[in-house]
Length: 140
Image 1 (cartoon, one colour):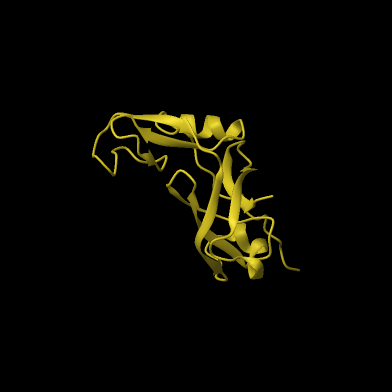
Image 2 (cartoon, rainbow, N blue to C red):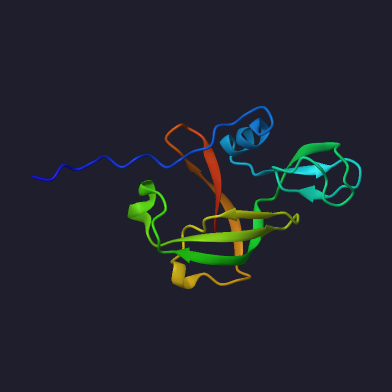
């Protein structure tokens, strides 16, 4: 008789003091990015120094949640047992209207229908620990 093992949960991030605003926004269904208070550049949420002017006076701002698919790949290899049932799955790079790019999954569309340049909008996936992460789906 073979013993079935329970699949582990998907790994989920744990918010900390530097990322709490991002996760608070996700909880409200809002995608948060950083903005430079010196040159007004819009930046990825993990940025600590402005990539345009090298300033460190950054603040959080709400993004529109709209973007386009910049590139993508389809994963066929299982790198973590929690994703076994999802194979194959996509990994995309979404360029937000505000400029920053996000690595994420594109949901709500077959992988065969993904097209670079397609319009997307943010949605959120909740993990077992209650943390929500942005994913993107075709825009309506």
